[in-house]
Length: 293
Length: 219
Image (tube, rainbow over all chains, first blue to last red):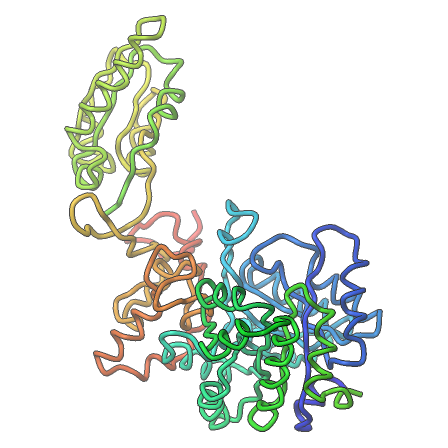
């Protein structure tokens, strides 16, 4: 069952992500993916994440596809103009890679090529528009395509963004522009997330809750301070503080959130951030072992 | 106005190192208001370069002059460059280019041209316009997303906004400002309007503006 089928059929979906290497040795990337085989519906492949230059997301997607995984092609507007974005999308579809995620992308000055020209010819909403055009058999200029792709486009949202109203307005635009599913920034407060989901449900949006496993109280505080749109509640930080085995407690916290979220959203997107080995343990703890075929 | 900034002195010195009689030319319009190319700044740069040159072998001299606008023929034509072997312009990029076009001498920029902006108190300016050639300010409550959003996003804030501040940490999020002002003006409907990809040809096809021609007309 593909991610699209899972989401459209209403089966709780599980995705995670892998980062392409800096270089051409894909052994580690494939090993990370291997840890998740059979446990996730699809694997996001980041696109020069954090504006750090890496092996291309499209090439990494092809490797994963050949290894039997369903890759999610992340498409950002930072490094490519509208010609390159459309042409890479067509390239992906020609390999049968059609699950895509449209993002604006982190700014180049946050990365390792700070002097680069930031492109941003298109941003997330407009990339969704480009995908919509390709799905209708023509490019952004209206020229007909030979062979029409069938992309399943998704987008991201930050439910704890401050202030929230502009973020929600953009979320609404992404739905209107054709986003068929959403992945969220990491969320920890199930009540706040439930509030966001009521808004999302009203619009018929399919949402995968973003999960980043906390490994210590220190990590939680760091994320609250430094990562935009992340709000780890004080009660969770206290729980990690008291823990004898913070890693296990972090896994329990993630699993608990996943179990609670099953009633209110359509799946989870687990961002392992270098701890892919913990993902199967989180899924076990959340009793999600049998969900994925 | 065009906001300009003085280049570091070592960079300026290196540019003109091979010349012996250098005319430093100020521009009494934008560059003067930018506190980077008016009479006072010309005088200061002439003195600084002269002092630095006095420690070097050879006999290099720097003189100063200021014209009203370096981007207009009548003022540039009046510039007296006799006896000099180079010009150091303290105007914006347009000023440097126009003097170079109207002089046989090599012309060097003493300033970096930063943006079209507004004054924000003494010695402070803010970028307001990127001269994109297809203005959207009517829909964005007069706040330019092309200029004031680091990514030039046309449809709302990215996920990097933190408490209303851009992910680069050096500016307010343009889209939070736009959203707030549209709301205050009771124009919330615009918050939901999807802005189509920008027509970049509006700029590309307008290398010169001539009221008798249409953008894109070939020569």
